[in-house]
Length: 134
Image (cartoon, rainbow, N blue to C red; front, top):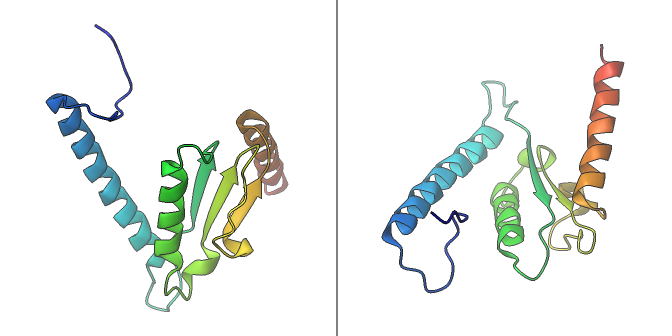
């Protein structure tokens, strides 16, 4: 049997694949709603809420669907926000197109690098922070 990614290609009508993708989309929508609720959540003193990092790796301009989805999630959290703005950030790793001109600089970290290089550097920085805190 030929294995393939669970991605809907143009003109496909495989019912099993379409059902699977619909279930996965529903899971994603529920996850996203949960993340938005967690970030916006406040405790009794008006503080709290989770921090959220959207990590986008290698999404360019030719097929911008993931890039657009990350911007949509970021926009959902920033629109009308008061306290969320410091708790959600998009980290965009791309060697050619890391910029995000649609949002304030405080909400996007643009890293012009390849995936492995950027993730290795982030890992090293996090290890250094953990060592400082132990």
